[in-house]
Length: 101
Image (cartoon, rainbow, N blue to C red; front, side, top):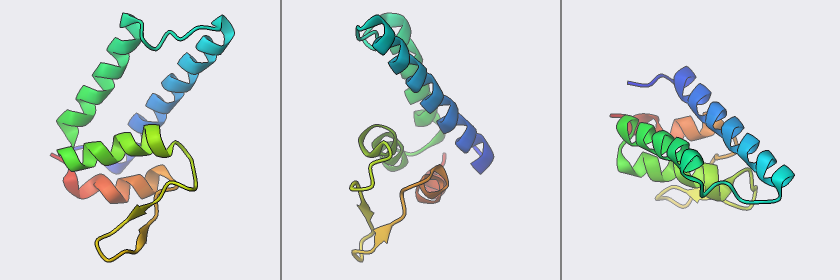
């Protein structure tokens, strides 16, 4: 079972990788995200998440990484209509930790 520290490292390292690929795209003025060697890295990350977390948590992790992506206007709500904190990786951990495999 993944620990909080391992989770934070995994997410941080993936974000760094994604940022580096974006920088390369900007320098080369092209989109290399669709290339097979970049896509393979993405597939490995997604597979790792699927091995570690149940489907609901996977959806939350991918939402946080690719839709929310630091945007303060993207919110998450609980069943009672209360806002769930989603600003930090630690907030994300609190959302997904009970859905580990």
